[in-house]
Image (cartoon, rainbow, N blue to C red):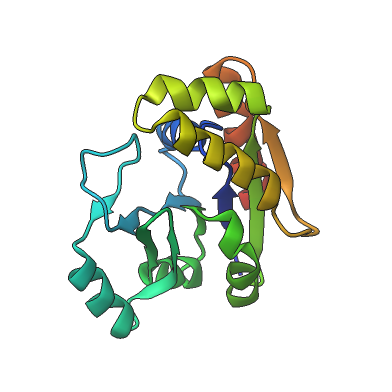
Length: 184
């Protein structure tokens, strides 16, 4: 079975930016597809290109079994559609934007899962979160404290991308990881 790349990281690590950059950089790949997340937040919120759903629509899809993976975090519901199972069965590696807290469940459901942790130091995370301007200082502090508590479970295939430098270095590192692993 081709790999399921499960990209995780704390808020402010630049995960959405790196995923978007890698998607553009390796868009011509015939072996790797990027899945969109279904999220119960407005489409114009945040930097992620996602499919916005009302809570009742999300619940109906979850009840109908239309998500391969779904979880709750930061007062929102997140889902990855069952289409990824079809893509993988057809021989495609798939990259998804996941959740650190859901890693263990995702790994149980997808034995070919390859977790990729995008991270940065606490001072860098704090600066990036403040620059977004979406949260109060207290909310930012809570996110930073959560980063110390919610660490990814040990996984034998874990890849770590330190996203401290310029964005192009991070995009290149993620692109290399995705293409090297999907060719294997």
